[in-house]
Amino acid sequence: MSNDLQPTCWIIAGPNGTKAELAVTVFPGSVGGLTANVNRWRGQIGLPPASGDDIAASAKPAKVGGIESQRFVMASNDGKKGLDAVMTPHKGATWFFKMSGDAAAVAAHGAALVAFLAESQLP
Image 1 (tube, rainbow, N blue to C red):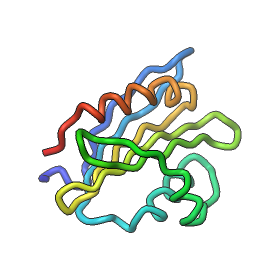
Image 2: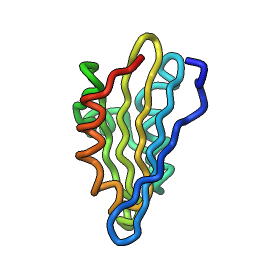
Image 3: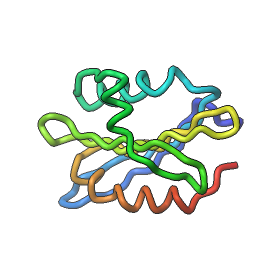
Image 4: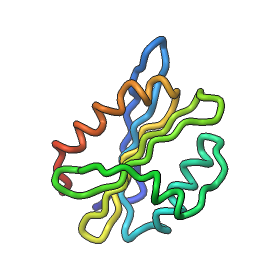
């Protein structure tokens, strides 16, 4: 994992000129845990922190290849920003697949992100 801390990013076009960014990062260990990571994402789209229980309840199951993962989908209170992120533990590291940007673009590509990750294989 020579690219630790260096995200790989793509810009994704959405409807009506909207855009989202898909970033893939991998970090050793659990990188602060579930609550800290999800609350960081919440802050990035202007949402207040949530409790660990609320975060755990909001997790949706996802798979990256055959690896059980957790997916979090959220939108800003004004509906303008969106985020769709998947956390995957793998070989002592945590992989993050985060699509964020204009809510319309994020929503338009959420199903494609899940399908892509389900067919992907991590090294």
